[in-house]
Length: 435
Image 1: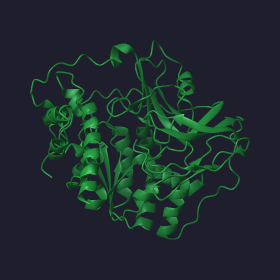
Image 2 (image 1 turned 135 degrees about the vertical axis):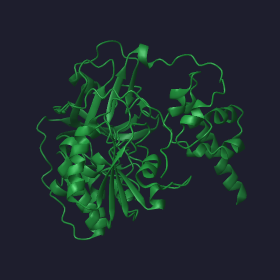
Image 3 (image 1 turned 90 degrees about the vertical axis):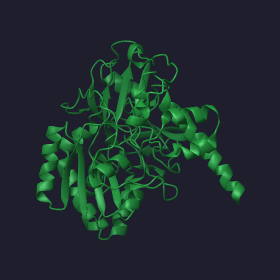
Image 4 (image 1 turned 180 degrees about the horizontal axis):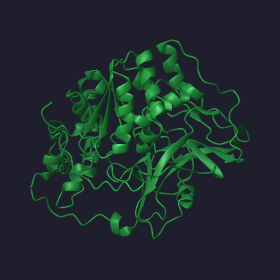
């Protein structure tokens, strides 16, 4: 590898990186959507009026690419009804009224595994998904057969520090996870990829690398989107993941550091994924901090726990300011893959007025995969799906670098998303026409 892929240098604003998570008491009600992962929604397994405990199965995975969902509080199932997610999609959700006792499901125990098949079955039972934001069912990813494991410890977006907490305080779980993956998955090489702006976390991860000769600590530049899978694979191994392919196609498995730690915790305790450490920040938050809370907690309760808002809120995001998703209502819950909640006032959230493209080429220069966003925008405006195909709009990773650097303030990243939808429809039609 002779160079690093393009990206942008962002202000870090890691105001909570030294913040020990404050444990939030159980909310009055938790809301557990049956879609908190990529793939088929889970099927509710409980009924209104049924009593549940922390860790009780309330949603069963359907098919291979799906994930179990468990009660995050003890109490009574209040109702099961459809809700509208931030994406606009609707799905059933289990509402549980908490009794405040947080009693654990009595049937839970640490799984006993002796084979790789039993290990993968245990991970599937845990309901763990990618906790860096993607939400892909972890048991499916672990079954890829890759021999090189890359632990993603980059956490490259501004504000977010929930993974940093994992790195500095849950090193034993990460170390245990590495041993489990080596034992049951045949992993031969482990690379921990971490940006150089996390000295405390680097020191903790170096302890793991010192103990295990198959573990390499890779210190990476502070360039966004360092944590994107294909970018991290290249910077960690020098291998290029081809367009339309996945890291497993070049023998690599990328796993978020908190996801890895959660696997180890489940194997040690038998408690499925029911809680999250979430960074709560943004200029409208009175008391920015990391919060340890039950999955399904309404966003309004989380912000209230952090002192409420210091001024009017114009935008709230699931995740970071670059790839986060705008939230239409504070009644929505914290999801499994929620790593941050950011709230901003109007002054910082309103997009400046865009002007005509000046053909400066900055968007292309900073695109990690060397796309030409200005040409993609033109092709999308003209409805030219064939040109979008030639421009490889489908490999856009939605990192937002193009929008960030554009001097004309054009919504290039948003246009890329719409262009990919148009291209998918075009490819589907072309494929059907070829039959």
